[in-house]
Length: 277
Ligand code: KIV
Image 1: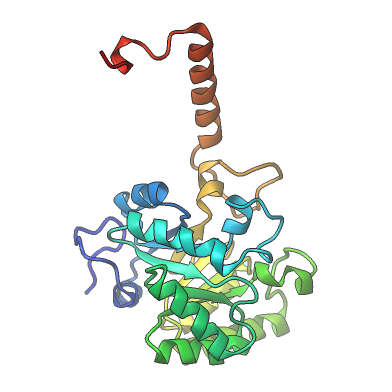
Image 2: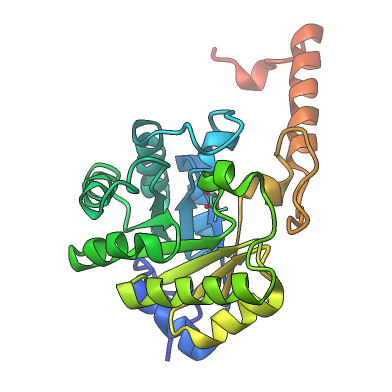
């Protein structure tokens, strides 16, 4: 029987075996993205068992419009920071667009960098049965792989935008087959992004590995959100339907900045207690 994953008492790092046991025990868990030491430490201390250094860093760290441009060299330092900040959480590094699609060997080279140079404990890559050979080679080389199906943002150009995936019998069957192919190739978990809840429920019940939903309904074994979406620190534009905002960090920061600025202007900061004598 597994110990509860979220906020568990064990101080050791979460493993993919813990995640497998959580599925058997029916224990749901949260996953969050993280991109730096300070937030990774907060999320880790809050008990989040899995942190993803997502290629969504392209948007929320680097300000690109899509995840397509972000590179391995841009993501690697972020992974290092998160790994230093997280003592208990399993840290998963996202393989960016163009760093694994060409061949299983290319995927192995990239994933090896994230494990050796970044210190990640697992990697994630996007795609269905087409990337099963990549998943198989990485897994056999000792690299745990989280798969990602449904809306795969790296394919925004072939999908012609960000839309619900797997709708209708044929598309639903294809997604189910992709999920099985990835599980058979050795993936330890699969992210399902923006797919109908009924389909996500079916995949979750058929697979023995955990499913992690983002816009895939409540029946998934786990849920993931980009932390800036969840905490209200995202730039302009309407958030996706699946986003629930649990805080307004943007408003808190704005207020703090304004107060700091006004105290500097008024000459009331620094006070005696913040000065050296
Ligand atoms: O890059 C990312 O943040 C992701 C999650 C949204 C699953 O892939």
